[in-house]
Every structure is written in structure tokens, then in C-alpha cells.
Image 1: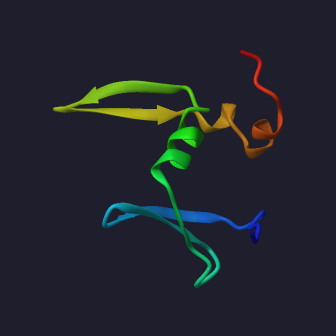
Image 2: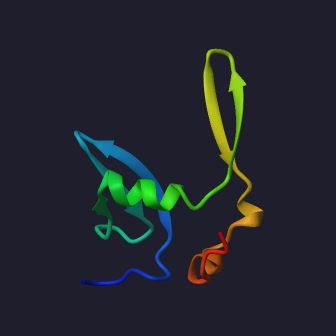
Length: 75
């Protein structure tokens, strides 16, 4: 497998039943499974607030940087 470390992710969009991740390098996007996306999102602590009729989650990105994923979990 090719690693894309250092490549900036610019967007995530549904593509039929799959998830496509766009990068800043043209033609270097990739598909990701929903199971992998769930594993990534499970690492964040969300603050959830209601806006009109939907609930929206927000992550404090200052608390989470890519370096933290290299550290072992403490819980």
C-alpha cells in the first residue's frame, strides 16, 4: 500500500454507497470504508448542539492534532 503521509485532505463526499476522500494533489484521492471512518471519528470527543431541527457535532480541533493519534490510548 502507498502511504500519503503529509498529503492534505481537502474534502470528504459520499459517492453512491462509498465515501471518497479528496486530497490537495490532483488525482490522488481515495475511497474509505464506513468502518474505517467510524474508527477515526470514535477518537474525537464531540460537543453536540441543536440548530433548528438537527443536532450538529463539533470537534475542538485545537485539542486534537495528528500527532495525538500516534500516542497510546489512556482509557
